[in-house]
Length: 282
Ligand SMILES: Nc1ncnc2c1ncn2[C@@H]1O[C@H](COP(=O)(O)OP(=O)(O)O)[C@@H](O)[C@H]1O
Ligand SMILES: [Mg+2]
Image 1: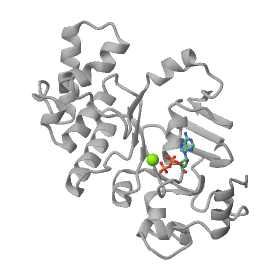
Image 2: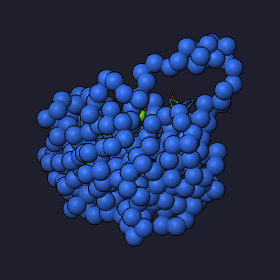
Image 3: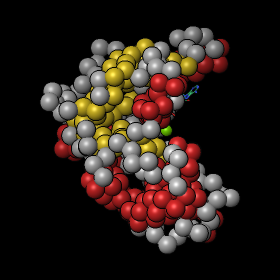
């Protein structure tokens, strides 16, 4: 990676975008491996920020930091100006309550019905009467187009429907911010488009700030107000979807257009390989 490369190759972030989240100089290593390098960006309130980048570029790791599952080596993560990095789990708890999370690993519990799965955060985090919880579950399932499916088990519904149930569960506690990690992974293109529409619909209807990780550019173009591209743990571009439609940077162009040839290497150099074998710190 060229260390002199500017981290902001596209338009600078608008100074007046009313950020709900500010990520400032965030860095994280696992052993000798620098997985996040000097990550700085903001997420505008009530809008959808999409994080794109190839496999292994650090997208999921960044998301895990943003929801407070991981602590960075350095840097800050501000929510409405409040840094969550130095917070203890107890201090973080009320902030995490404002998040809805739909991660790849966030599978449904197969032994529970659809309704019970959606009710879970309400049962765990509130003292609401079971009748009220049932009502809220119906409302959330209605929002994702699945009212009436309460009593089915996850094994009785399709992959796309499971994602929608996961989404209903993610919004159960009326979150201010919803985090999605590859929400359309493993879905056919039509079902993936349905999930895109649903994310858009929810963010508009419920005035939610969305942070979406994806490597599908068609999805990014459809849902994003702002796009951030990660490459090798570093932000290499940020801007509007229009900035990314006509990229001037060969690295961005290669990713956006899915080109086989370009600056993104699909194999490490022989030197890296030897170092890797010898476990020499780079
Ligand atoms: N807990 C961990 N320990 C060690 N390495 C990790 C850990 N989590 C992620 N990594 C490494 O960090 C890099 C980025 O991973 P990840 O954030 O999952 O990428 P992406 O989501 O963009 O595919 C990968 O090389 C991965 O192997
Ligand atoms: Mg990932």
